[in-house]
Length: 380
Image (cartoon, rainbow, N blue to C red; front, side, top):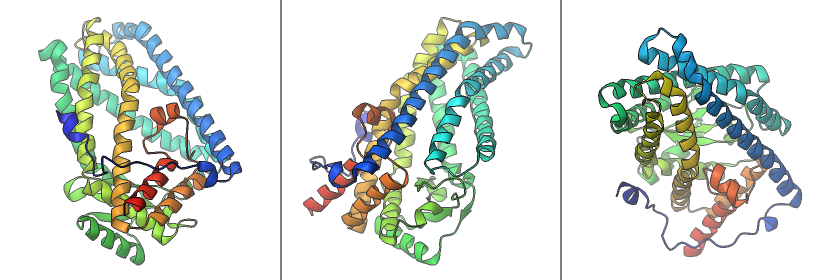
């Protein structure tokens, strides 16, 4: 019932997207370049996930032996095993991460140096260590009184933590500044048109790290915010295209996508945690530290399995935000031009293979977004 209530969007149910021929929009050289660029990244990511699973399988097979050498107590030993597993995964995946950065630097998408990337990667690793420790602390603590039913209590606890993180996210984004007067005025008009006058607009200075354009909506209640990367405020993007981006991001707030995303997270976490609990049960359940390695394997494995469904949900939300942007700006030409620029600036494949689109993409393809703008125009 929850999934049924969360599924509908403001995009008309009878909307038919017209056929879009990418070869009539983009030149052949650019299409070849985007295909080559994304092909390497896709296979690099696939190889990274394969290695990730292999490392976790080996850790599940042998990692429990570390528990015999620990005197840190039940939960402390479990957290130690979690940190060891994460460290092994990080070491195994580091070559693939470096390969991805090298490839993006080769195409001038990433401008940051390798030293800057390593420092940022250490911060991400630190956050992952904190997350895995907190995850194990909660699950192993709940497993004491609830044993194999800990997942029933853990799901709402993790949903509450996700709610807190969603509220705090706008305050954690670095290098934010107020927009220039013209952009601020456009933001106020878009916010008023979407009924989101209370949502702040900020610009994040990120041009020293990447040339890629981006924007996002974040926050809940009084922390709600729209953030544009400064790379989006430079040529080839013009003011009308930036207005489309603003309307898209304010559309996320108007449609309640952050709250809906949290609801989907809470819903999907139930079967994920159930599978983890059932797998760990064969090793004494998460009450026992020796079950931690196999629980981590189950958590990552089932998360990869549900990834296509998670992507499907986010693509529906992004399509709805595009629709809100069209309804707000009434400027399908600028929307189409914006999406065309994405192919040129970040080398996004306009029409990726279906399997890659299902597995990797959190947004509709460029040809689908162009088709949606045309479909909106046709309905008008």
